[in-house]
Length: 134
Image 1 (cartoon, one colour):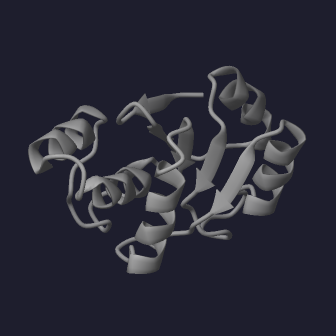
Image 2: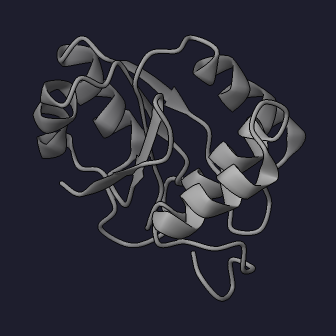
């Protein structure tokens, strides 16, 4: 399981599987946030499968799906609430791109834009439209 740390609270990754949950817990994460809509691709595990595995491991799970190109205010506010807990958060989508953009939007009021842009760039993502990178 490969993930990228964006700040002291949030790390992002591509698709998570139920078998990855033990590793997420071992890394010290307390909350898993799924930013990938169910049924986006064939053979993708459903969020309820990840949620069940997370619950069994004693981790909190939150489903905040983002369709490429459509991060709404509700999702951003909900994610800001998760970040306010200041516990380690593991967010995932197909590649980690949408999760990193959601993190960036959620941190705009507390971090300088340059730090946000650099963290997203260092993670291997950018702010290109989802059609270019999902």
